[in-house]
Amino acid sequence: MHSLVVEDDVVQRALLRRFLKPYGPVDETADARGALLAARQAADADRWYDLVMLDIHLPQGDGRDVLAAWRRRERDLELPPERCSRIIICTADPAEELVNSTFHARCDVFLRKPVLRFDLIRHLRQMGLIA
Picture 1 (cartoon, one colour):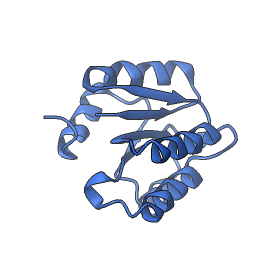
Picture 2 (cartoon, helix red, strand yellow):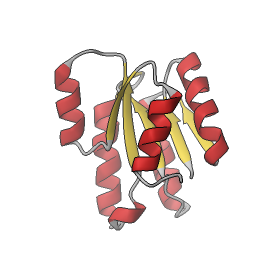
Picture 3 (cartoon, rainbow, N blue to C red):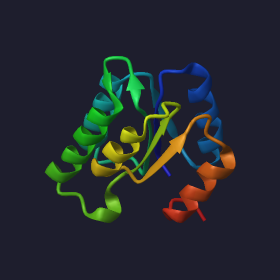
């Protein structure tokens, strides 16, 4: 499983990396611009991410905008559903409209921070990313 962690908080990013590392390579970026660059590079290399862990509140942009752009890129590339990234939104923001807006933009899972390893692994299994 090839993962991308988009998280500006150093501690959260390290925690997610530690949770995901046993399952494959983990790339990281701390801002929205880096996430969009990673998407472009992955598309150019024909090596799309299996999983994207995406924070909502990011420097240089909003995670919801990244999510929408990511899904547009998948559509433009005409990726079949099984090749599209599974996107997990992570946030500590309690606003209920965030949940609705991210699901409307086609996130797969919404997790509140701090992300617990147990919850993450359970969702990865449910999405068929790990056994």
